[in-house]
Length: 199
Image 1 (tube, helix red, strand yellow):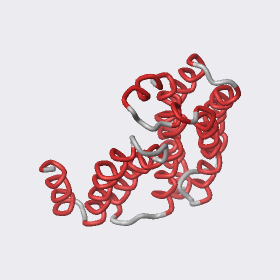
Image 2 (cartoon, helix red, strand yellow):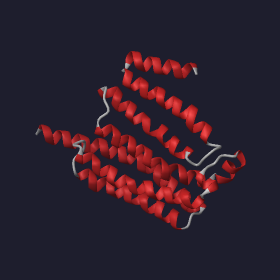
Image 3 (cartoon, helix red, strand yellow):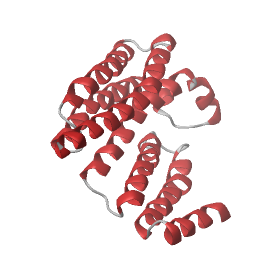
Image 4 (cartoon, one colour):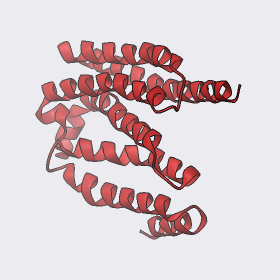
């Protein structure tokens, strides 16, 4: 409680009120909604994904004191990415979640768990396409991002067709590689796009 309060106050004083407000909202969402929902409903996973989507919004707000279209796309990417990442991880730990009494998709609705993983892996394609449309990256980003998005989507499709521990681990490790590579590609193609604009 003390560290959370201090963090929000520091953000408000030394960054800006928008970033502080997002930080406060994330604390409330995590401690007040996500944590309590774990024993109540599989919807807890969506609440947890929102918690993970807010930090890039905070970073954008800290740098620009606003939330533009690019911030929303980055937040949506982090939101979508968490489903193939967490759902594949939770599948291998479903016995532990069951013993703890947590209402996770992998325990109560394993087919939904795999289907949601695939659905949000596929969502990475239109989200990636939004960045050049918004003028944040060049259009070559579509090609590069499609390669890594396709691999994670393939792993998610294999997991969806017939879930097992081996396929869930493959999807999990593909998601670990996917996010940093995607973010590096965004930075690279943003740099290239801005250099083209100067020239």
